[in-house]
Image (cartoon, rainbow, N blue to C red; front, side, top):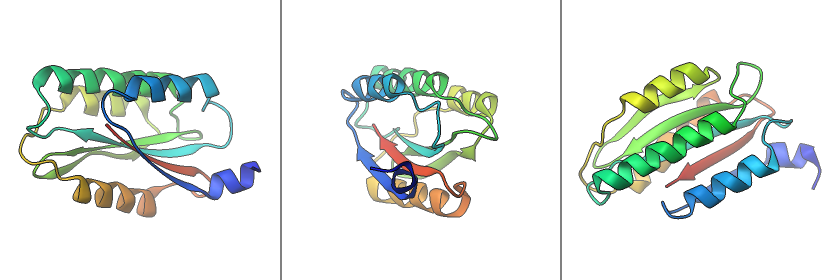
Length: 142
């Protein structure tokens, strides 16, 4: 598949918390540091179905993902959506790794129901409105 077609594709990857480390390993091994750049929305389960330990495991996995990618104004950008009963756009798409790390560290578990539908809608809207043109689009859910 040509890199042009890859850039034009929109990926929707739904992962459960136990697959996150494997997926992150595949992403970092494959090297998302080179072109094409990606617009990545990470969906973070903050619902009551996740216990505090699992919530912290998710945070660690997301921090590893953030540290593994080249996040910059001219490269990959990432955003964070947390879902429980309510959906929170914790950080819109950003090329500022420090701001993303701060947003991730300040998050707290929102609790409530597992509202996947609004989480995917919020991530999709952010990608539609703020993704860099020419970049691949990815949504990850854990």
